[in-house]
Figure 1 (spheres, rainbow, N blue to C red):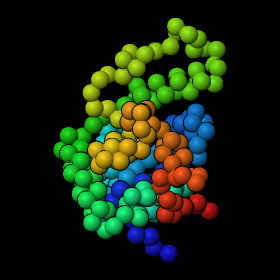
Figure 2 (tube, one colour):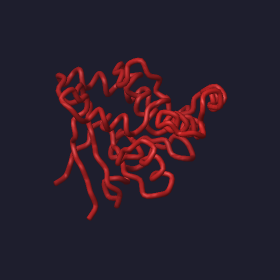
Figure 3 (tube, rainbow, N blue to C red):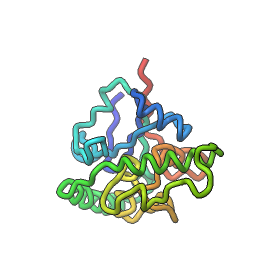
Figure 4 (cartoon, helix red, strand yellow):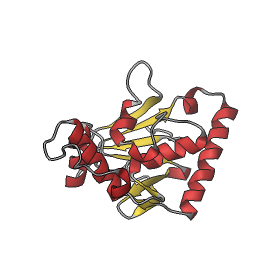
Length: 192
């Protein structure tokens, strides 16, 4: 069965390396990476070397993944869907011309926050790091923050009250489950 991906569809991928396993363990999620479908079989994503605009290698790959679509891009009247996609395209083109760098400090900050929330004795009050100490201000993102920022620039706030840099692939995956889900699962792929 061939699936037709739409601009703005989100791919959540299961990792296959030690870094991905660490993200999965820290967040308690099967998914450790997020990418977004864009033009003609392409995806945008944040990788270790920064912003990438590549062919969609997930559809032919060996990694498990799930494709989700925002309800507004699924159920809205066609002119509204086109308006949202045009906004996404404009912001993605801006990112292609001004590519952000990968934010390793945000990964560390999220790991520290998760360890603190689990009561880890290594991070007692007064010994943790502030965001300003861990993250240089500027345009640095991680994979899930890229997705959230594109949606936010489109006028869809996936996580009201939270900054895009603090979002994980697990947070995005949670938006596809439950009675009030904002994403619809379009496809799941599990390699044999």
